[in-house]
Length: 128
Image (cartoon, rainbow, N blue to C red; front, side):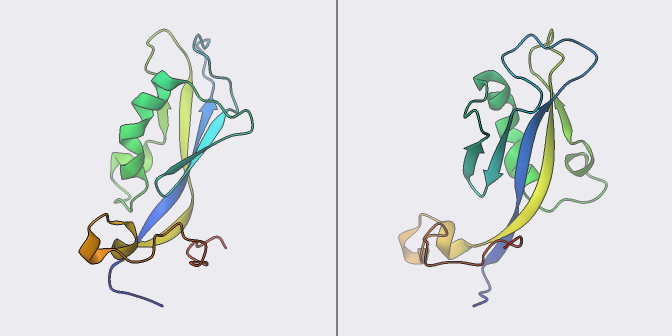
């Protein structure tokens, strides 16, 4: 059922990649986490270092949204580790799109519908 308060967010994958400079922080190439809506899902080893995560978090909500093809948020997908001595890089990839509605995601009681994470709501992922 389509409502007029729909919006789409990209699912993201944030993966550790290397560079020519050695990494000195506790992240290894291939380590990753996924972002689906507001949720972070950590890769198979279940960990991701706090300081790079703290540096990446402000970028992720913007990266989840549609942006102009000329916007740096669209084109610059590789982010440096915040430690200036570390060669770690983080690749942010859009992996799919997920549909939400304002009424499902807001905390305002007058606009609250069924929560987007409710198992009754299926088929809200473009990749399904």
